[in-house]
Image (cartoon, rainbow, N blue to C red):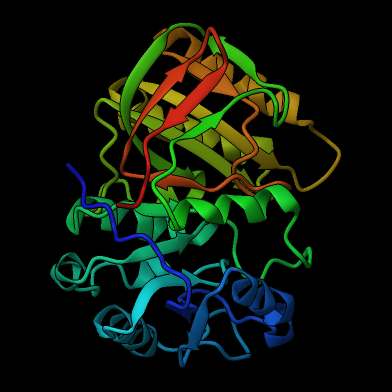
Length: 303
């Protein structure tokens, strides 16, 4: 049983850190106002800064910033504000026992997948796959904003076609722990101590800016690593393509070629990932995927 972090209360302090690529600080403006609308106060980590290059700071600086937020008794949640690249460089340097002893909400997606999979496994802690606070699209849409409410009370999420059309690739129903996220970052764990554990779990997959050839390559890598056969079911999120050469439907057909022969419940079209809305979900909790009814029910992520 994974540890569920404590729910947030009005007036709580949340910590904002960046463990990936540099950000433009002005991108945080309306998002900071949104946190205040939620009734939250915030602390800015040392990594909330503009910078050159492809990393916001040295590995040591980013780890220190994260550990400081974990240890700070005033901080009740940690929001990772930027994606890009960088977290994979420090997953072997993070103190997971420290996080297990100080369980708190961790929120983010994309590059943060590299952190989610490790915290779920090595700190035994539920985390949250949700939109960044430095999204280039500006103000978060209403539905994405609404999903932050799951941090304030234990809410069971029920995802249906009321949000967007869904496509059943393989029928049936399955219950299992929810894991996964960004396909590229999942592939990066294979063959390492930090390899994602998908056994008897429902695997969430999403990505952005990858060609269909590269996506095929990564799906094949999962197949050869036996991850597809080990998973119990599949939730296929958004795949934001880099050009107009291929459509989302082409990607889904390619994914179908890999997953349909396995005959495990699989549904595609979830607004999870680099899309609007970006539906936030807890990772590490049990979920029920009913591919016949096209529903995904997820247990609460907080206590």
